[in-house]
Image (cartoon, rainbow over all chains, first blue to last red; front, side, top):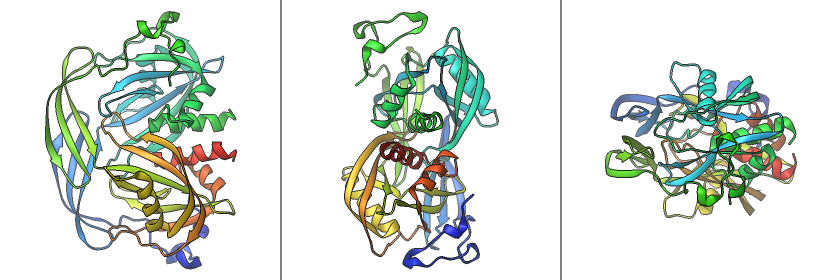
Length: 201
Length: 201
């Protein structure tokens, strides 16, 4: 919860919540169309009235999956990173195990599936550590981040479009990669630094 | 740099870099079209051959701005958060000052402009702390994060479509918000937790 007593506006004037504009939606949507759609996302093109009362447009990239990301931690303090060439970035990227949870499914179930598919790991202990929005200026993508512990190893089975490498390394090294932009994926950076702080690493 | 000596694959086999698949692009793009475009982004719909050699499609959301985000820190250890209703999320969101840097412009210059517009603050000392990708499964959005110090206050001038609130609070409280998902914006969570670790807060 926001402590509204601490809300301030410029010029040093502190106002109570009742004085402030509310947190309700100040935008109006006049009409909406879907000029593009594929199995993973759609674009909603909308004519709007902005909070300032002026006419405008908004193109919302609406995702058909929630994002899920997992920091697996083994008994020796190691974690696992997944490396893959990211088509959208045109760059190779090292990340925590992550993937999609179709809308209407349980994100934790999808996190368990993604961890198994990408690393072969199963975990007895799961802890949700964050809800996150990846790119909120134009997308509605929402993600959930987890710690997975009490790990056992099995066979992994990446999706057939994936070409993944797996890297087992001390958690502290992965955290250092997040601090120095050798990991650039926002879900991975957020998850690893939350874990670092929770664990005092 | 990735320490390739530490790369492992399943079954405990450690291979040298020469044995591993390279980090070059394993995808082939057969053709590309742009079914949707607005002033902020475009969609590239592409027919591809996946790394597994199978035909597929990819819809890349290509942003026309880099993202920039700023953690301003004053002499008393306070920071500033910006509150706004995020149209794409349909949710109110508290975030670090952030915005867009059109492709071809200097992100640091845009960070300075966004900080001034949204908070009225100018800073004598700027430090880049991260390069980040917000949502790399489907977008090419790239962000740059900064600390701004030696602050002076002036008048702020939000864009006319914006309806912003400004909140000055101890940096440690903002970091706690990032840890507990009261801040969900991935750029803000990443930036605040990087700052926390750099400063030992």
